[in-house]
Each structure stands twice: as C-alpha cells, then as structure tokens.
Length: 140
Image (cartoon, rainbow, N blue to C red; front, side):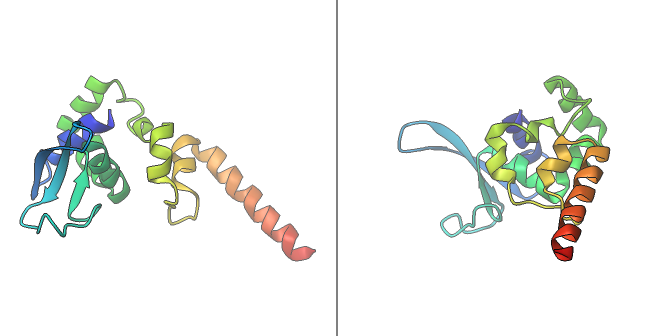
C-alpha cells in the first residue's frame, strides 16, 4: 500500500520526476527527484526519495497525505481500492514503517505512532500517566 500511495502522490505532486533505477543486485526501483535539482547532490528526503514508500512517508510527515489524499475525492478512491478508506493511516502502522516514523512527535509531545495506533482517549490517558510519573518524580 505504501508504494501504491507513494506512486499516486509522485504523479500528483507538481515538481517531481520518477526515474527507474537498477541497484547493484539487479533489482529495479524508483528514485523520485525534485524537478531541476542536481541529481548527484540531491539530498534524500528533500530533493529525492528512493522508492515510492519513502515518498508516501514524506507525504504523511508533512501533512500532504491528509490534505491531498485522505481529504480529496480522488484520494478517497485510491484508499477504497486499497481497502483502507475507514482507516487511511493504518498503512503507516506496520513494523516496516516503525523505523521510518520513529522519533516523530506531535506538538503535544506524544510519539506520532502512538497517536496513530491509539484512540484519542488512550493517548490522553497515557499523557496523564506520564505527567503523574513526572509529578511523582519531582516530589521525591
């Protein structure tokens, strides 16, 4: 699903060019470059993405996924084809994505993955528990 979503995004985000490449093992993959960048000095995650899955993760991190996929009619059709229209963020929850998303935090300070995986009430209770632990630590 990440590659499918990344492919969709790469074809709908203006200013990106996807190039098929073959790695040293002979496997084909796509590298998506920002239009006009120097391909030799392009920075991963800024000027280029190695693989459509990386493009999808970038879109998720920046809010592009929500704005241009989840909240659009055409994007909703893509989510329906993938069978994730009722939980469009589920593709960012699997173990393969844990490394890519680790370290991301929301403005509230909660780990982003925890907010995705847990219902709002669980997230709020975990925040309260953390605050209680901090208060207890300060009292000791």
